[in-house]
Length: 334
Ligand code: ADP
Ligand code: TRP
Image (cartoon, rainbow, N blue to C red; front, side, top):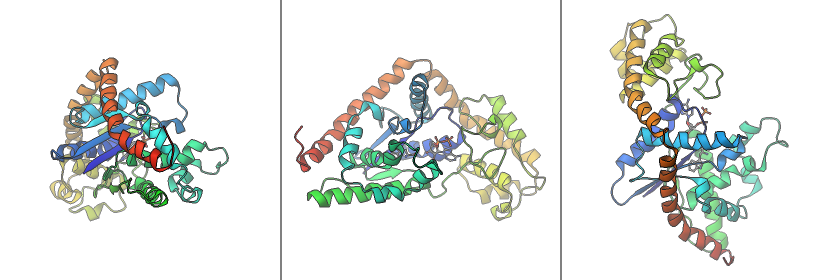
C-alpha cells in the first residue's frame, strides 16, 4: 500500500482546508502499518497555473509545509516535500503528454469550470494540469490517493493514462491508483452564507476561520456567524433548508468525531445562543495547539526548507526507478 496526495500551496489557510484535506492525511498517516508508506507533497508546480509574485509563492510553500507539520504530518514517518524539488514530476509529465489525448482533457470539468468563457485565454498549463497530476501519482506507483470528490475525474484520467501507456509500450509499469474519498466528506461552508464554501478568496474575513486566528477571533466569528431564529431540531433531517444551521452542526460533528444526528439530539430545542459558545469552545480547543505549533514553525524558514529538502531526497529516490523504466520503455536513452 502506498498512499500519496498533493495540495496546492495557496496562502491563508482556513478551517475548510484543515477539515476537508489536511486532517484526512494525518489520519491516513496515523493508520499506516509498518510496510506501507505515505507521500504528501505541496503541488507548487501545479500552482503556476495561477499567477503569483515570487515572494508570495515562496511564502505559500512554507506556510503550507508548516500547516501540515503543525496539524500532525510527521516528516520522519511520511515523505513530505514540494514538487519543484523533485524533477521527476515534470519529466514524467512530459513523457505522459505523448499518451494523454486532447479529447480526454477536453472532458475535464475542473478545467471547464476554471476557464469559464475565456478558453482561448487560458494557459496550456491549466489544460495539462491533470497530466502533471497523473505523473505525480504514477511516478510513485501510488495505490491509494486521498482526495476530495472534485478530484475523482482526475484520478480516472490517471488510470486511463496508465493503462494506455502500459498497453502502447507493452509493459506493466504503472500501477492503477484508487481514489480515497472520505464518506462524510467534510465540506465546510462560509460563516456568512451557508450555500457558499468557506474559501480564502471570500472578501469577508468573517466568513472563514483562519488557521492563524487567535482564540478571541474564533469566538467572535462563531458568535457572529449567520443563523436562523429556530432552535436546533431533534434530528439532522430538521436541518433541511437551513444551510447555515446545517453548516455549524456539521462543523461541530466533524470536530467532535460525531454525527449531525447525535449533535442535534444533544442540543435539541436549544437556540444558537447556547450552541454557538459550545461550538466556539470546541474550535478554540482544536485549533489552539495547531496554531501555536504553526506560528513556532513559521519563525524558522531554514528548518522548514530542510524538512522539505530531506523529504525531496527520499521522493527523488522513490520516483527514479519508475522514471527510468518509462524512458526505457519509450526507447529514450538518458
Ligand atoms: P480555497 O477554496 O480556499 O481557495 P483551495 O481550493 O486552495 O481552497 O483548497 C485546498 C484544499 O482544501 C483542497 O484539497 C480542498 O478540497 C480543501 N478545501 C478548501 N476549501 C474547503 C472547504 N470549504 N471545505 C472542505 N474542504 C475544502
Ligand atoms: N489537484 C489537486 C487539488 O487541487 C492537488 C494535486 C496535485 C493532487 N497533484 C496531486 C492530489 C496528486 C492528489 C494526487 O486538490
